[in-house]
Image 1 (cartoon, rainbow, N blue to C red):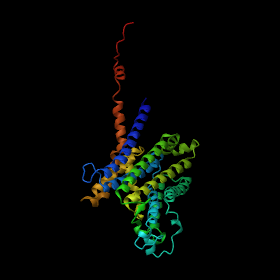
Image 2 (image 1 turned 30 degrees about the vertical axis):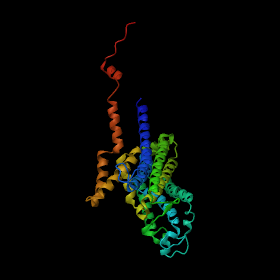
Image 3 (image 1 turned 120 degrees about the vertical axis):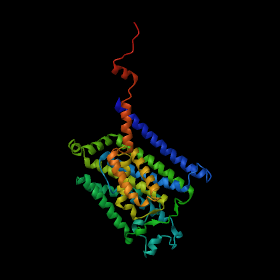
Image 4 (image 1 turned 60 degrees about the horizontal axis):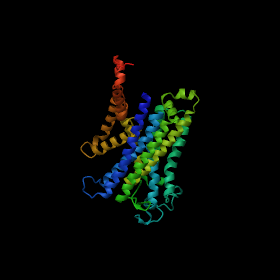
Amino acid sequence: MMPHMLTRSLDRAATIFVLIVAACGVLIPLSNLLLPAGSALQVPTYLVALWGKYVCYAILALSIDLIWGYCGILSLGHGAFFALGGYAMGMYLMRQIGTRGVYGNPILPDFMVFLNYSKLPWYWHGFDMFWFAALMVVFVAGLLAFCFGWLAFRSRVTGVYLSIITQAMTYALLLAFFRNDFGFGGNNGLTDFKDILGFNVQAEGTRAALFALSCLALILAFLICRAVVSSKLGKVLIAIRDAESRTRFLGYRVESYKLFVFTLSACMAGVAGALYVPQVGIINPSEFAPGNSIEAVIWVAVGGRGTLVGAALGAVVVNYAKTFFTSGVLAPYWLFMLGALFVLVTLLLPKGILGTFNSWWDHVSSKTPNADSAAREDGVTEPKMAE
């Protein structure tokens, strides 16, 4: 009975999460576009863009929770896949500028003209088409994850050693993208975007549409993760997390399972980065900073590792707190507060916000049995009618 009730509870929580995200994806854009400015219920455009950024972070948190919470792979370099997806979308947006740039070159972006590029690098070709850029968003992040994972998991690198080399990977990409001759704008990155699919990226309607699309992507990412962890594949992933050597002894190809889920997670992170860039308006090498990846892990820990919903919740809560505290007198101390938050959550709420709530709810539910079971435990039975 209890496993059945727990499954029903989890399904109910997942349904509520999807409904809330769907409602936000519909109501917030409509409030921004239809209600007059100054109305109490009207959501300003800047808040639509800000919350859209939070939704993208929630997708990134889901991708990390999928591998860390359910497979035990602690990646401290997942920001690299997020940034690669962002750069792929940024390249498409740069190609849409055309003659409206500072130098008016119809082919070369402004930074290439400034750096005296004679022609467009070969890896920029095709990014003038949206479908190609969308494909590269998933393909580039997935290919890097597949190659990295194949080498790491085949060598049976696990634990803290895997975390360290994921940090090394993202730091190497950070240094590479900082170079002006790498062809991605160097330190300044890619910015000054004009259009996406023919629509002005600064327009209120475009920002509202991007927010709604981000919410739809969050729902799809959550459903994909949910389908994975609820299937037989998910049970194997949990077995790998809890007892990898025993799972391998039972005949499972642990490396293949790890490689699949790691690649899937990287593709999700790439999509999050692609949706992030047009809403923020810039992508530069700072997105590869190892600190960003570590911060994303903190979101998952705060929300609740291995809960999916908690990971998305943690991303929103921590980033809202970051926005609130970095705009006042506490701004210089935000990193210290973030570190303290991680330590306190680890010590006091090791299961995170949602995990702790679920444990408390299960404990309360177990102490409120129905009347019949309570009566049987007390030795009192209902009198039977005479035959």
